[in-house]
Length: 162
Image 1 (tube, one colour):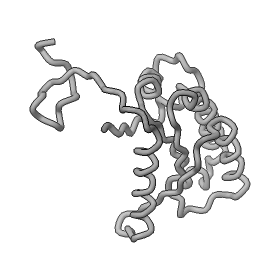
Image 2 (cartoon, rainbow, N blue to C red):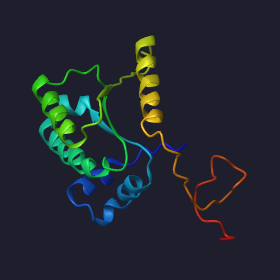
Image 3 (cartoon, rainbow, N blue to C red):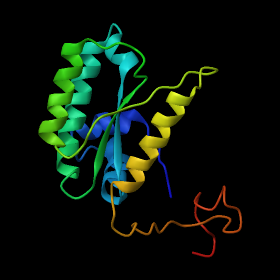
């Protein structure tokens, strides 16, 4: 199992221009992932640049509509303890339903030192949804290895033998 926390810049570029050179990582993930999660950052949607962030998320969700034809896409509201304007949240939710109709939004939040049973349950539910989203056999990932015996470094760099 591989969880990739890819740079947002990859996906912003990809959402704006699918063939952008700087979006190669996003294209690779979209092509190879068994499940993708789009994170809507509630803090950004409640902040002073919420309009810009909302536009970026709208474009990304629209692009995910192409991916959702062959790969499950999960919409996650991160930092969901932060209040987002109901109109703004509804707008993004409707947009997600239009482009990623099979996805049910999930709320997650966790603050350092504020873990509680509810937060843990939400994260466990998120992982359950991610794992159950694609019932087919996982796609094998073929990657060069630098140190095959070291699990941490097994997928970094190129092997001199290859």
